[in-house]
Amino acid sequence: MTSVIDNERPFALQTRPGHRVRGKIIDFGNGPIGVFVHGYRSDCDGSKARALASHANQRRYSWVRFDLTGHGRSDGDFAKFTITAALRDLQTVLEKLAPRPVVLVGSSLGGWLSVLAARRAPRRIREMLLIAPAFNFVQQILAEMPASELAQWRRDGVRGFSDPYQGTTYTLGNDIVDDVDRYDVLCEPVRLACPVTILHGQHDEVVPVANSVRFADRVQAPEVRLEVVAGGDHRLTSAIPRMCAELDRIWEATTEP
Image (cartoon, rainbow, N blue to C red):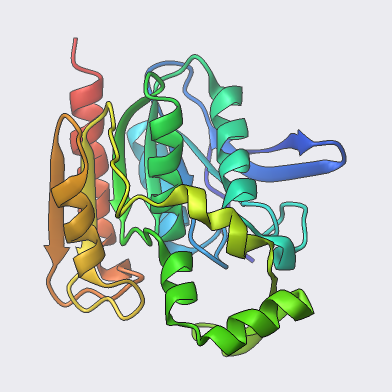
């Protein structure tokens, strides 16, 4: 059983008829509000998600964390996961928080989704902190998959994958194959209206640091900062104090008179 974070309360939002995403919110009633977007096959109760929510509460930063469709407490079958569905979840949360300015904090898949959301709502996003962002990771999986396996996936409708963290297998539908083409952020031009900070582990075993370097070199934004965390892996739990320090810097900058 996880410990309760003071001032946090649960919420549920309908993204389509009969389907809800669920999360938790801390709202001190003014100023920007942070939104944490978790990674692929993770949820909003992970170690980073809880640590950042706790830090936000201690500093009196308004804060939201929620589970994407098919993850954690939210509705949906993970096998039907697509980037479109996950992005819709995030956009629904952002719409509910309007007109508050938002600081997006995206981990892994959440970093990719944060960029996509910020591109669609440039006036809402004040700044972004991306933690080992998994830009284009689905395209990378497809590019590395033998043509015969991809054809089999299309024929069968679902395919099994191994989860290296949980030591289990899971199934994923083939809707994601065609869905993902429109969400390229490494080859297509990306323009953002807010500053971006990226923290990426030197020894990330899941997402190459080179992806963040490539993104930082290509993106057009008011400011782009990339910090490669020495010795860091993909989860970057050892860098949580660094993440909290970045939140303090961002809040100080976004609440200046």
